[in-house]
Length: 455
Image (cartoon, rainbow, N blue to C red; front, side, top):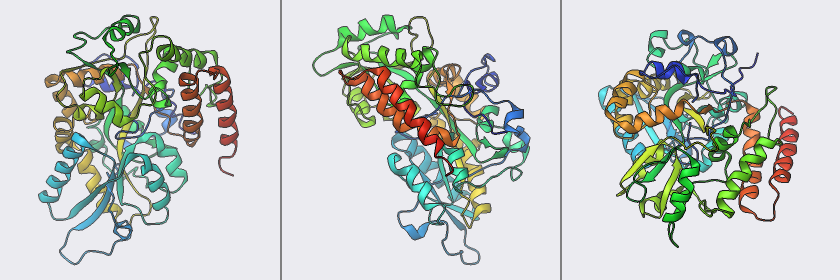
């Protein structure tokens, strides 16, 4: 049976129980354009569905790529006595990049068996670069990305399965469902690095306390707007950022038969809600990109921002707070949650060395640096538990994870992003477009494109 990764809530209940939280049957990042891939919804898979118990899982490697095409997985073998060099690609930036560079440097200096050569690849072309170069043997030995591409990449010959290659005791250190999220068709394909979802960042000098409801938030930020300052800034026209409203109004990304579910009253209601925030309330601007969000917030020109943990180290000179997403009409928004992981590539000629590097990158020593320097909500349980006690913001991400939905990792999900983004953006920001008509059009496109998969 195909693992139904369209999980309705990554059992962060188990995850959070390990960290002192309630076992609340909730969900799982992940980030979008900033540092990792977008997330998708899902209906939580049982161990029977995944077919892999935690002890059976395996580890993968983090990846950063070399600038030169010939520095990929087909590099010449090292001379006797020299360390094996593995190439890793990632898309970290700002504080996460500083932390990751420190982790790689620590690893390379700690031993002389395997050295990592990492390269930051811009987020936007990352998926295409991996998808094109790895099957040709021209990509990295390992890389870091969100879990939502697993199904697609397995089918395209990108990922090396690691089930049985990592001891069960090693895997026990991670939040249990972060390991399960990396299973596809009964095989483990990665090692968990971090869990990521949207939360609400707010400028405390403008908005001292975070309202718990959108009904309270909207009039407050509206009163604080100026010609230069916007109330609620986020990439509202994209599915990853919009999904929290879909779930709040009772919608789904896929229905119970794993068919696209965009032509529904709940989807229309979600788009119309944000459309009202844009046209009627005037608090959600259009034309926002990831870099816009950062600059506007740092300049004091955004009262509130909906963003993920990758945004935190980008904030400079702002007295800010972090809170869970406010409720709307008594309903709880549920952002997508992604598990960022390190993967070993199928065409790497250095798989054993790459896996060793991956195990270090996912492990406790690395997690401590990534959490403290890069502010990542890490999947290494002991590190996360200690960090949450010392850092209130980390607690917010854990609380939001109780109301998040794990990204779908099947190939069908990858078909949905573009038509969904087009429909959502048009329905929200184009005055003469009808949200229902746009969503109906997207639904038809999704169904047609899914029908072509495998042809």
